[in-house]
Image (cartoon, rainbow, N blue to C red):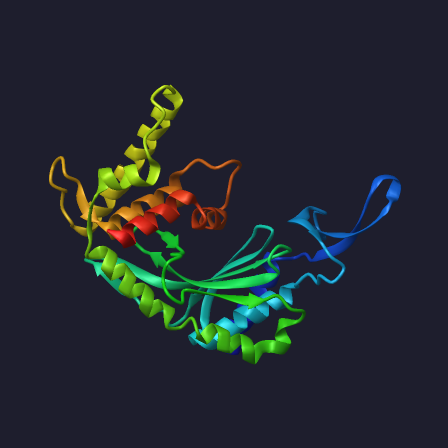
Length: 294
């Protein structure tokens, strides 16, 4: 990565996180001193992390997140762009500048993305994962069952001092994209019945509840519209009437795409928030397991 690109990436990360997360002792009734501490955003005073921490806990800083991104850049031959989010911690999606394009089917292409998650509190660790971006539906999916697709990085103070170790850790992910391509091709080569696939993912609605029936029908129709639209765009043709035989790759992406782009969410979640929510959605996880097991 050139110095100018590196500087731009670092500047965009700093601009995305113009605040710190600070640790303050928590008080009991009448100001009673406690052994517990809370984490709070400096700009909004919002509580972060979902629970208390001990006096030994050191919140990571934006410079630590930049160190993670720099290490990823060294390992992957450069990072061309980052997208930043925040959900009880930093969440970044990095686009390698020398990304390897894979064509799954005629015009159905995917590219690697590197996802870095740096939460506060909890496990006290960071996670880096290789994911894919699919041009056809603008999905960004983090598959959980691909060998070597993620690594855990211990949460320590001042990661900049551990750059050599970080770079070696990220280099362990460089082969994961090859594994993911093999998994994707395997899914493409397997056929599933889309009706049965959705039944296995979502089950049957509660027939006694009109709301449950309507929600189930609307969701099913939205997923089928997405599936059909994608088939038309790459020239796969219409499925055999009444059979709906499609590749496991198509079936998985129809569910993942619906959850990421179309499912109702509280508030007005950003694009990156929707990616975060879809990554841990139970339906997406079941769809991945099914697509790999048929």
